[in-house]
Length: 378
Image (cartoon, rainbow, N blue to C red):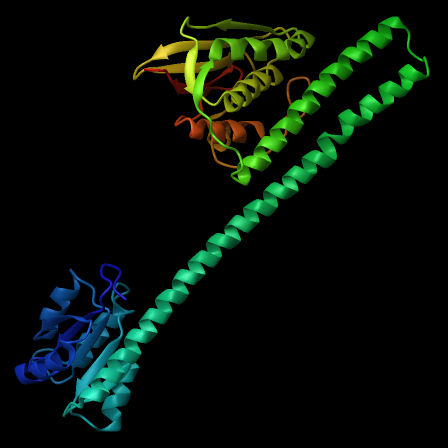
């Protein structure tokens, strides 16, 4: 059926006014939109601006007969799919065969019989509707298949993370506890291993939190609760939480924050975003580097939040990949720290709830700046 109208559009092509009058009288009381052309050239002119769902085409016309009109329509990919019913007084089998060979779908013979005309038209329109319904169903099925494939890929990725990235830290914690119980560590070794374990537990906790948030996000189970959030306090708490990871790599974390500290947003989502950006900055910065968290008033009553580092940086291709939806393969950090690829995906999802998006400025060996905008109270 014509995509521009619910009512099927039928084009009558015949140079004989009497034939047109009869067909119009048959069809006028039905839910058809009728258009008329009195020659082949006129039909092409009409079709160039308005595509019919079905064409009733007379064979015997001057200048250009119906066979030639059909041949040209079927040769053009834009019009080849329009079904054509020939109108003819020619009863010889060879004439009908020629019409079918050119791509016609049916014949209406003269003199007209109303019931036959209506039956043949309705048959073709029913077939059109069925093809379109089947096409729409195929599109839906393809979309569902794509979603299932993406879900399976995400599931496999998560299982890999759970099976690999959680097993190692938990195994190390288990080994350390056994060593402590067996009194096999002296004071210095014990303190050093305990510090490493604390970092491992912290990293594992953040990993689990990311995975749980991501799983809920994929199932649309996370509610967005916007409120006034003390962003400076949130940033300060996050820096304090991640300070031990930075100290362990001899990285200095500093902040330059506007006095304007209240933004509109979901505090839990913003905490996840800020934590992931700072954690990534530490991860991809070499020992002795710096990480700076900054807020700055921007146009349109917005606050720009940025996390900058002196790390290894990113190429344009890497930036483009990171900004695409989904879980990405994560590189190891400068001290061989593991990653999951979930964190930035979460950041993008949560920022979309805030009407914002993640922006990345970076180049290889020159550090990176990850930033986003948040709304300020009126």
